[in-house]
Amino acid sequence: MSDIKKYTIKNDRLKLTVLNIGASIYELQYKNVNCVLSYENIEQYIENPICLGAMVGRVAGRISNAKFELNGKIYQLDNNENDYSIHGGYINLTKKYWDLVEISEKDVNPYIILKTKLNDGDSGYPGNIDIKVKYIIVNATLRIEIFAVSDKDTIVNITNHAYFNLNADKTKSIKNHELRINSDKFLAAADNCVPISIEDAKNTDFDLLTPKSLSILDNLTHVQTLKFGGYDHTFILNGNLPYVTLKNKSQNISMEVYTSYPSVVVYSGNAIGNNINMIGSKSFNHQGICFEAQYEPDFINKDFLPNYILRKDEEFMNVIEFKFN
Image (cartoon, rainbow, N blue to C red; front, top):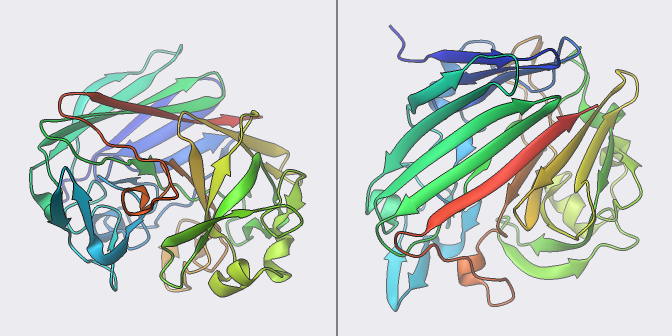
């Protein structure tokens, strides 16, 4: 008997189903279209090899050499992928069964609040940390509020890993979508996807200030996008809103992304592979796209990036919004 539970909230515009495993977005329906990829079998969320729909952390992204220094002490982390630590190591938010705190199913601003905790030393990180996520529907916007408190100085970088596909027919890829990102700079990455430098996006595949069709994924020209078969990169956001716009003209659906975070990792599903059973389709590369709003990955090890230390007893709070039109 599975321990997985489903929680659903809706208004007259959006319908959201969240799972307790990973606090994962299972379905997000707008105009009767599920706008995210979902595993065919709910049990697949237990292993969740591609972090589908899940909250990821305590630190999203990669930590180079699976270690960092804080307050003069070196913390050795799980190196759970090659030579680095990814998405919080082996003990992470994606694998956790979150507890329901509260659910409001009223028509106006319905919400779900889930909580979990990670212990001092889990995957090598310092601090016992209490984490809450609140999913709230406001008109046609899904707002995700992320809270955390630690009893030691630590690093926290929590995001959501939903894969968006605005086609009703999930046998269709994201290549019929259009993407705009309010960003002039991106982080170039080494072969292991760890950031190595801040680069200018102008007149490259990363210049998305003017909307581009994602058919560009078949016509890539930049050494960075060619290396990864698409986008798997951090865009440093400039001050203009909305930060991201994804549009599917054939379905007449668009989605805007807003966030309190300074950057968004865009992953165009380059390595989804073709052996996962999804609702409505077998999986394939470029079937979905992720907008992982977060602090710049590996900031703790990079002098060229800002530092974001969560101090003992301070509250971590960030917001990610997906607004549908």
